[in-house]
Length: 94
Image (cartoon, rainbow, N blue to C red):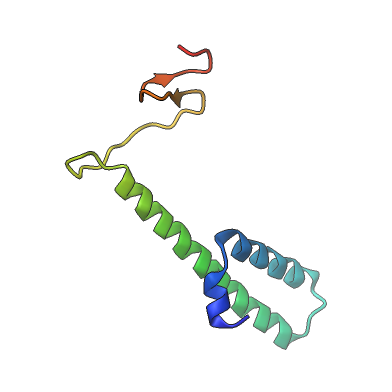
């Protein structure tokens, strides 16, 4: 793919391409040149995925600030969910 097409890929598409490269490299049936080429592509995809994750994390941090710009820390609990009014309720609706 050309650089413009690589940038247009979604995170999921980049991750899938990286997984395919790993499978090919693990197969061990490639020439040294092909292995190096795939390794370089894998490194680029890995960095691209990491950058996208970092961008998402920064966006979440901005969204998780209060009206005065201070970070709001909350504990994530799978059994608790926030209802429409912003109140927390558990699986039993309490």
